[in-house]
Image (cartoon, rainbow, N blue to C red; front, side, top):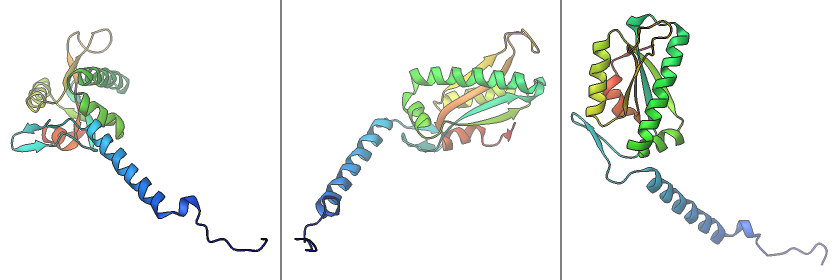
Length: 171
């Protein structure tokens, strides 16, 4: 028996095992897509329809540049906006939140030069059915109490967020 060759094929070399694993992967992928995509949910902005499932999602943090906040103050206000948006999206748009968490949690910081611009963007985001949260400062350090400092938009599909913020410059 030593030196005798075997015609037996190993378990992992079987075409049936390969076929079975391929089918299993397809089924798992289908279940995941159904889990992360909210059926029938579409958001519209003007003539732009956005599908319910996207792997490209982001949160935009729009900072009022006219206030002259220090870098530390801006970082703190952006953190407040991100947390507010996260909490609101968990209640109102969990499908966008799950997709954003799954595919990288992208964030972008942008700037506006006035309070009026900030409010106009918030109205556009709400009209597009995106989460939109404005942070108002407590007034303990640099900014007057109640001043709107940062607008958080999203998380949501990039193409939808970009219809609102695509014209803004990076902060």
